[in-house]
Length: 428
Image 1 (cartoon, rainbow, N blue to C red):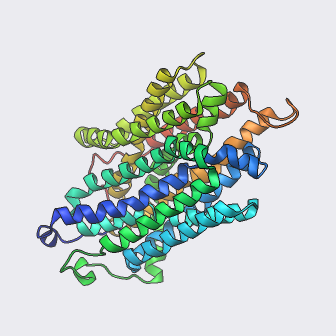
Image 2: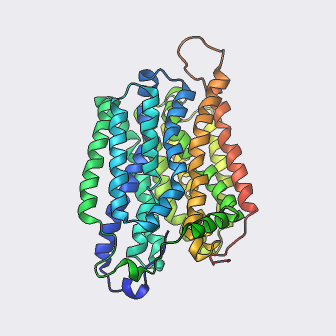
């Protein structure tokens, strides 16, 4: 899935053109990350319009992740066989149409289906620009380009916080989603003009790619599923990434209702968390490469993350400044999850790297599909029977549910301890 071009071919290219193509392709990941994190901005309005509790909101928001998880492997296989640009056109239009339907519906089931289709499009969010970059850049440039693409995605997550909250407050969630559609259409036109599958003078035959049969696909899948490294490090990233999903859906409510910050301040705190991840992504990768170690920085990050989450939960008062510092630190620490991708690549045969990354991605994204509604259920479970009327969750409700995060952080960190250290080299 992520096969690289011949170095001899790459050195003749215009790197400026390559960067333009790949950065425009990264806008797709940017756009998809807005779709992942938009529930902080529209969650309160959805609970009113669709008469939802925390469990219902968690279930609705999980629709994206179910579509995403189910299509991660098929997305990789399709990208191996068909034009990246044509697939981009199809999935982006699907996301745009589904978001438009979501903005008009008053039916919970229709909303779930629409978000499910957006999730299918999101399955291509990271893999598609990485596939594009692998055709325009040599292997020694892929760490940098991958980091930039991931940072672009986190920038989209920032847009899905305070800026979108402000927009929803100004025009309402339905009109905001229709503007979201307009942004998608703008990106569609730009991508169709700029993006090319291959650099000029390079053909698919020169890329040394071959279309594999069903037996080979099954062999790749079976080998990836039975590779313990994919499970152990994928589980780590799944659990370390949970604060992104949980706070994207419930963070503003928690900081506003329980910690007494304004909605705008709470939204800015979420933006600050993503800034931490944007800054932390290249730094944690650089530290790992410099140390020639993968496990050590991941384990250290896991234990530091537990301390930060407990501080967020148990500090008696949380000012805007202290919240900003803690959530920035949490975002920075969560960036250690990015080390999983080189670990999986170094632990897999060359022909299995794409499938293995898809396998790890399924574990990572299933965190949102499973644990987001579970977090909402924990809130409602602890609240049940305490107060009549509309549900307003208390500090103790959030405290009970938030314990999910340090527990899963601990499990993920222990999982990495059982994995093999690659020392930044291929071990198979």
